[in-house]
Image 1: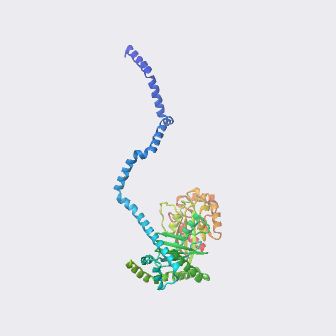
Image 2 (image 1 turned 135 degrees about the vertical axis):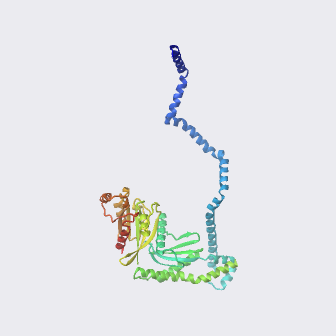
Image 3 (image 1 turned 30 degrees about the horizontal axis):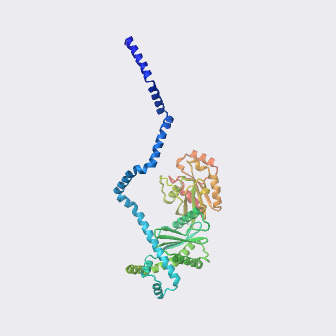
Length: 291
Length: 160
């Protein structure tokens, strides 16, 4: 390169430096801003916040149609899955609703009968009809009678089984007694309501009624729906059982006690069920026909 | 037959449910599923010709025993307090917890159990035992089953 062209280059660089001075300053500032997270954040954050605010305020307006379209398409495409997901829930709800309605109906009938009737003779039907209770109501009441499935007498604190009787074989009753006591303790401890105890556990149309005594409690597992009158009847049977069989009973040992209590529970609660069962089945069949 | 209620307690994740499962079913599962509330199960033991039915209450782990609902301890004849040999944080409350449990069942039997023996060396076990400075009744591994049967068998003898 000769001397003249070197001078030209020098001149050109100087000229460039003069002309681009401002641009280079701005470019350097921009570069600094981009490289420094704090500076960049200061610049960008307000813009992002503004956009987020805008989206928050205008999301329904701006995206309403798009979201609706997506949801509609998703529902259309997944109808079977939706039905599968909802069916058990709806089924359970309907079942519970019907059981509840049955119970209310039975409570109403029981109340009316209790108010006006004490005997169970031939006049019962006549008087029931005079009260304006329909035959269909009586039929309905007979359709879903409560059935005692199992009775357990359980030591109150330890949850150890003192005796039991059941209509059909179930899983280990000692484990049932322990688990029931644990649930009872958990609920009573969790809510800490003075002098209040767990009285019933329900799943579907199956119920476990808990009757609390001083040193033990009795769990009565039953299927079918039960009115408050019928609950009261079981309570009174239990009181009779406790007074007649447990009040003066002095066991020699735990085995003997378990056998004794189991035998008595069977006699008081399960034997009457077994004896009534054929008549009950016949009754239910007749009721179904009449309905 | 004699029935006794026994509580399995201790901090969370120390292997109570694994001991419970190993004792009742002779099984071990690597998956950790935290216990919610209580799980009750039963196992019968033959103690010198006498049949003993142990109702075992596996209680959800708590960092400190005074957090466990008092009603769970009612009527219990024995308590197995478990800690984790491989987790020093579970060694911190042992003495206070044992004192508390003694008040819960003054006439009952309390067993202090060091679990997860398979995760530590014999030297480490010695160091931990020295540090805790309270007699440990059993060093178990719910995973391998080591000393689990012996623990319950000894407890059974004490209960009869």
